[in-house]
Length: 319
Image 1 (tube, rainbow, N blue to C red):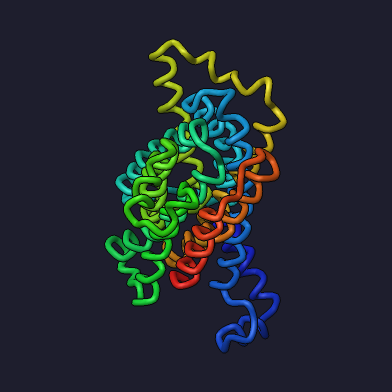
Image 2 (cartoon, one colour; image 1 turned 135 degrees about the horizontal axis):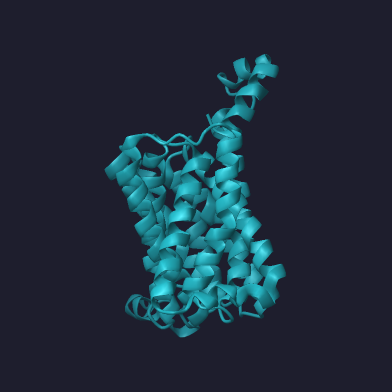
């Protein structure tokens, strides 16, 4: 049993009246607790994305992804060891491998997208994640979407088309489609959205055979090892030290990433994958645009406002 699961079990044991009334909808249930975890994950990812945006122009994507992974390894594996949840069953191998592959592609494309394009244009495209995750959860986990949730998928995808559009393109469908490719980082972020949505689905499958903290520890260890071997083969291991001149941002980002991943992995064990991703992205869209404006002086255009409105409406239907 994971640490957060044990916390929830102890909480209900100490408050039996709440455990009973939760069944009747009068107080916080396990699913509502998972929603709170998802909100916390969303806030953590949003600030982590800002740290990555600051570091992306200064450190190459591969060493940056590797050093973040190595930062996370001792904390996740130490957590699993401390909570006596380090055991991993044999069925973990395939879903664990798929998580590694898709996460590796996503991380590298994510950093490159941030390097090429504004935060407020690229990160909101991750609103495709709940749409992809909803489909993936249906295909691989049997998590069926309702008609209104399929409507949400359409709104999320449609809203993305407005992100890069100029005012004179807002009402021309063909020009909206063309505008999506105006920023090269936008197309990369669509790839990221697909990979991370697939990762979330396989995360849920993998955690049938391992605890959340053991799963996270194995994944970041494998990610860091693969990228370090690649850097060594290229004679670029020294690039792992590229964050030394930016330690405050890097350390902040490292702890934010640990918080975000921990909360997300515990939440997805209770919630549908599409629902968890929808809640997470709802906050992510708003924060990306607000932080992009406050920290990087990025413009808030009419297209971005329309896009956010459609995406948030879609996310509401998805949930």
